[in-house]
Image (cartoon, rainbow, N blue to C red; front, side, top):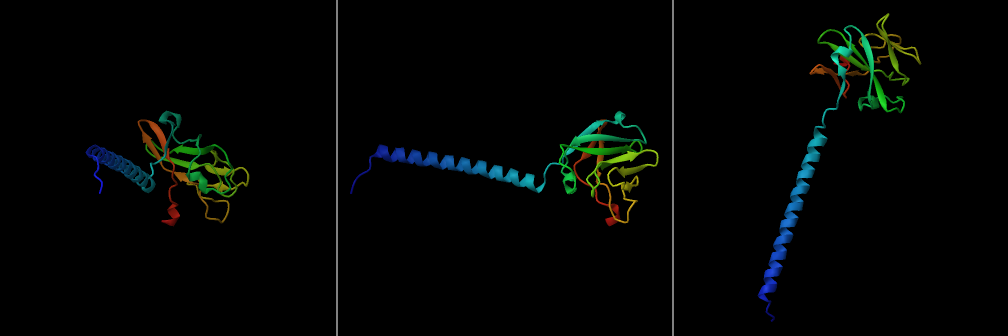
Length: 169
């Protein structure tokens, strides 16, 4: 039977303690990372885009602005691959706003607002949508993608999510 050197035993014990501390530290960081990732997956941050100051949007008029490609526009299968999305924003009153993705969901063409008859028209297919965004030129139940609008500190903002169709509620 051999005797272990007391210095060697002490050195091995210190190494074991160091390894245990290091493993505990790594496991703690891994747990924190996985927890943060889980929270992000369960509730991703709302993507909000600032369109400009309220003064840029005259009362009763529709203004077209471009924003970075929205996740909401990915639902339009025929949408062309571009880097920006056009959004049509209407200031209805001091505290009422309406914003639509300016893409026709069937043709993938940009929709423009016609102030004269207060409709949205797809230039490619000649589809016409009313001021609520509902298709009125065909018998299909289509609607322009409507985005939520907020005003924060006199800045107009949209959230990157589509509002539900009120006809389906």
